[in-house]
Length: 243
View 1 (cartoon, helix red, strand yellow):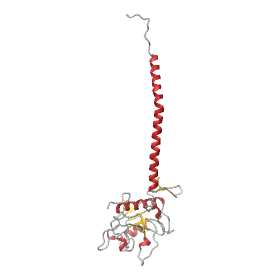
View 2 (view 1 turned 90 degrees about the vertical axis):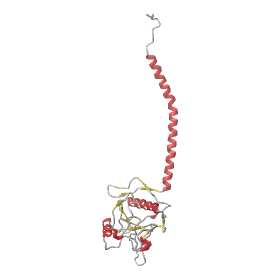
View 3 (view 1 turned 135 degrees about the vertical axis):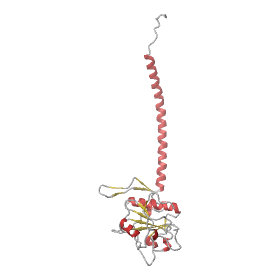
View 4 (view 1 turned 30 degrees about the vertical axis):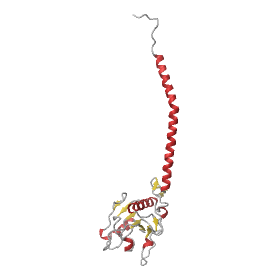
């Protein structure tokens, strides 16, 4: 499976994937998680051979995406062999205090873009409960969790209303606060493209009208210049006798 093009490759331990008899992920969807802390803390967990926890991607607060394993690898992110063998795990930085800390605008945009790319690569649905899950929904009854604690704004991911591109790049203000990027749905983009074509057609028509109006004036101006130039030319003296 090709690596996610925008991702920074940050491999996890090879020993922390797979089960006997289950080494290839069916990739029937994604499960979103919250790191409940910093990326540095999460990487320490990922690298710790004593912790039976691993996942495929990490989405950081600044929008960077780290890829740890191929999406067909069976990572240990759900606490369930069944779900680990059929889903791709995506961790999101943050969520310590408060636990329901919203994703930053660049983090959200990167997460949505990653999920849509994975859906296109693997063919799973962009629907809740059918391609899109939260950790709390698939965790075993013996190990319940609140993860990702309401942090994932699913209305941006689903096929019906998933924004897949932003106008401008999310950035921070001088006070260090994230400036919201405007998000567009596929329908919005199609409408904007159609409007752009209409505007270009109208502009082309105006250019033709201006050209039609200006051309006679240019021709007349050139005729006047020719007449002036001809008037400046010396005329032969009619009274002069040829030698």
